[in-house]
Length: 324
Ligand SMILES: Nc1nc2c(ncn2[C@@H]2O[C@H](COP(=O)(O)OP(=O)(O)OP(=O)(O)O)[C@@H](O)[C@H]2O)c(=O)[nH]1
Ligand SMILES: [Mg+2]
Image (cartoon, rainbow, N blue to C red; front, top):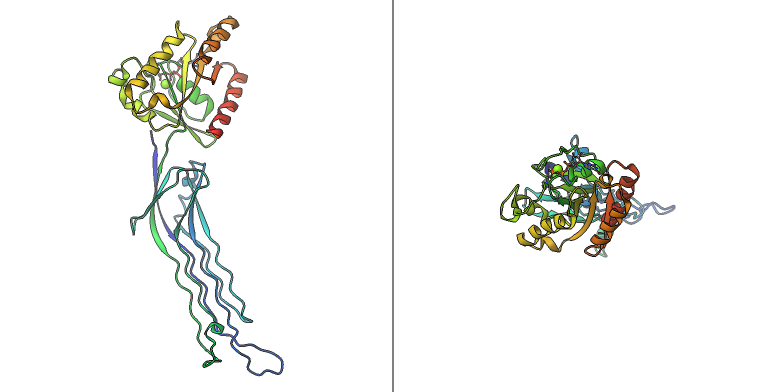
């Protein structure tokens, strides 16, 4: 499920500016002392995590990046400005490897940043070399090169929320309603054979193939997908109103999670009672909600045929993920 995308780039931190040789020029002082200022250092090169899984494609055309050069020193002892730092924005989940040194970093949360290349120092101007024995130093130093390197960037996406439930609960349909994924939908069990991913305001929703009794021992599509759930942060458990015994349907899936182990059943969970349009009697719906609220605080009722309901759920889910 972790869909991995790869990219190679070349990056350079800024070169430091050069120090300069300058002399003070004052009225009536034919030759003043040294006044060449020090240069600015080169800009550092950072990677910065953002919540945008498509950002790598922006860099397709441009694969080389550099931070700003430090400004040279100037006369009147003025220091050059430091070069601008460069922040390469990468999606949360990116693994950055310097292929020259094998150093590696992983961006795991929004806003996290790492310094991956240091800018070069700025050179000293001649004023710096002034001393009692040398009042007219003609020496200035050039700036140092910034660090450079080749990098590999791999995107490893971990779903923020996994949609689970018995086959036919409406998982793929819900993914399609919330994101621009185009998951296959069918009125038969095991329509979904591989997890589908959707981008929901930068959060990743994973639609997991249906889980049936015995899945933890390999039945149906089996353990393969339970393994994937291990990596999602939160679960949304879908239970369809088509089930005669909804609670039993719910417990069947929970039992498989518990039997699989690895703390799958300890993940934060929300419950979505789906296909409410198949029930005419509102009281039945309310009763079911009350029943499920005894198990879990966050219970939602949803029919994908009702746009308002979908919109409301969409907003609630966005809030939950933001908090998460
Ligand atoms: N009446 C009604 N039908 C729905 C609703 N949501 C989905 N369906 C239908 O339910 C059937 C199953 O939907 P899917 O989204 O494929 O279900 P799934 O949970 O992904 O199923 P698997 O991939 O087999 O595990 C399809 O025929 C959908 O059109 C709903 O809100 N109301
Ligand atoms: Mg499906």
